[in-house]
Amino acid sequence: MDFIYNTWAWYVAGPLIAITMFLLIKMGKKFGMSSNLRTMCSIGGAGKFVDFFKFDWKKDVWNLYVVAGVIVGGFLALQFLTPTAPQIHPDVVLQLQDLSITSTNTSFLPTELFSLESLLTLKGFTIILIGGFLVGFGARYAGGCTSGHAISGLSNLQLPSLIAVIGFFIGGFVMIHLIFPLIF
Amino acid sequence: MKSFVSFFSIGLFLGILFIKSEVASWFRIYEMFQFKSFHMYGIIGSAIALGIIIIKYLKYSQAKDFDGKDITIKPKEKGFTRYIVGGIIFGLGWALAGACPGPMYVLIGTFLPSILVLILGALLGTFVYGLFKNKLPH
Image (cartoon, rainbow over all chains, first blue to last red; front, side, top):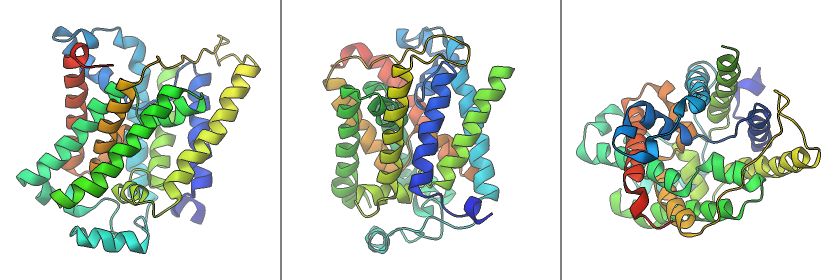
């Protein structure tokens, strides 16, 4: 059972992601985790205001079934299969201490950012909301996220996906090295 | 119903995978952007490596899907601006929130209200993109 409880190694997790992509293609679909956000906007009635959301979302309901599974799977794994927090590189633990984040190696997410106490502060709430906003906006602008571009697109040797993934990493480096020191 | 069960099962598996491989952990994303661990690069890299082989095989063998229909993998539209600008915006959010869209849903299981705010933000971002789509360079 140790195999289930310990962190899954990269050489297990990576191939399993590729196999998931394979299964979705064999089921006549594709692997991408952000287009469901558009589907949800459409179901919520966004098509009344914006043409981008006026599409036959019933054809895309399958991706909401996947989301439902992801939510339940995450719940099961977090509650029953994950006794230890991610163990992060010691250098990174120190770097995070400089940013006043000390829940490293004891928690799955930094409590300094995600706890209810933090959410109830203006700064904490803003960070979370803007983080989500940039992910949603950027994913649709770029036409895909980590799964749609980095995994599906690069597996299909798509140049646009390579450009998008380079963008992901430019954005990530800028955030962590230039913006984090300003906000934390 | 059959389609619900099969797609739900795929999601269930992915949800467990996102947690057990820790790709849904903010700390792992931070560590990745600090270049301090091979873990995330190994996951993405090995997924792509096997993915390339799978796609090549599917194309070469002209495989059918489970329903017996031809498999067509749509190429991404050509372009530059939308991919680089959209990509950078996405990357900023990925690093700040420490989660991309799949992991966001997974984290609902933490029962932290902040995750719902995060998803609300992502929906809002998607909506605002739709609102300004025609005004943005693509």
